[in-house]
Image 1 (cartoon, helix red, strand yellow):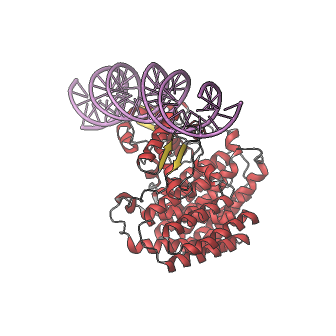
Image 2 (cartoon, protein in one colour; image 1 turned 180 degrees about the horizontal axis):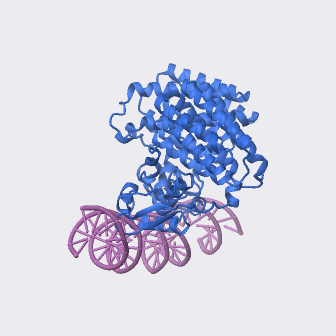
Image 3 (cartoon, chains in turn blue, green, orange, brown; image 1 turned 90 degrees about the vertical axis):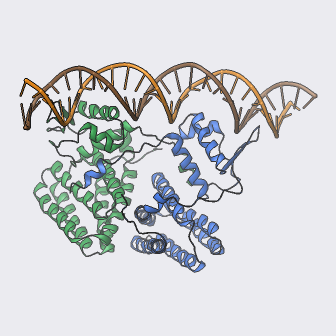
Length: 240
Length: 240
DNA sequence: CTTGAAGGACGGATCCCTAGACCTTTTCCT
DNA sequence: AGGAAAAGGTCTAGGGATCCGTCCTTCAAG
């Protein structure tokens, strides 16, 4: 029972504003929430929205520029744009790999809760919009990056169905963490096809406000990913 | 669909190490995870564990001392202790009250996912330990602070069943947020008795690795709290 | 009565972040 | 053609949080 105190005395990790900004924008770009060619808000506006000083924002923008995710053009009508050929994703670090089970656990938690809340609150028009994504995704079964981008939009879309901004943010972070893991492993079209079949079943259950079925199918869906990862990634040995 | 970008450009809130330390220790004390009389690790050890400088830790300890949650004694054999008569909890601020639905959503997400994972992974000895908590709790139905303390231990205990430190931390934070809301409202013994009946059913399902039932009963349990809050707290008007 | 372990206090160095002014480039409008 | 406007790019001064090391004070165990 005293084990719970380990969490209380665990290290505090104070992320700086610079780090969090790079993380947020970088994740949004890598997930395809910000597509190539998109123009970011002007620096003076964006720093106000993010609640940070402009020089801090610029540090983040410069960092993302140097890594090839952004490029800026000067002068009136200029701005900061998401770079068109995005740089190739980096392979996951050893520490990310070591914690893959924790990431999956977090994902299970977030996705399951969101599926239930979405089933409770879903409204027709938004469900229809997600339905269209699932139709479009069938054309991408041979192109994993394209598939993954729509996949992310679907899952984030589920979070939006809850009407809770905090959950949208949580889902975005979770998908970012998952992308780090799954971007570099093989995804046969049959697997993606099956995954999308599960997407449809989840969405159908949500449309009917059938929380139990949504939860069950979502669990099944996530287990599929875990099964794939378990076969390809190392077991957590003597991890901390 | 562009709504998801609101989350991307939302303000970054960089919590300082000082603030997070006060939050963590203060929450653990208010939840009863650190009981009155408990001695904290020595400053020189604790700051190492938390990964912060001793002066930063001291700021936090001084703050918690001034608010009456801690007191320190000097000299050999001394230390920093959780104060014995804990200061009365402060009533929730207006902003906490305004966001109560979001807090409940987060709680739903965290508790539901943890219930499912716990059902998947639970081991007998730890389940038995939680069972004892539920027996003890029956003697506290007339004393809400005492009831709540065991209640928190039970829910955090569920998180420990998952074997995932990150989820334990999430649960602790969630319970802290809930306590701010429910500490000042009436809790008739019948309501607490019913809640504990649901505790038993959740734990029984977890013992049998029956994930679906655990999820269903947990949902029911959480809805009960929401129902009580919905009747007593203001509707979210034009909140941001 | 000595020693060791604990809290308490201070000062300098460093880094992050803020705030604001100003420069440079480019395009649009008159 | 020329000026205004809008964007990124640069610089500086300063505040605040944090870290690190050192020293002081207290007090019980041995």
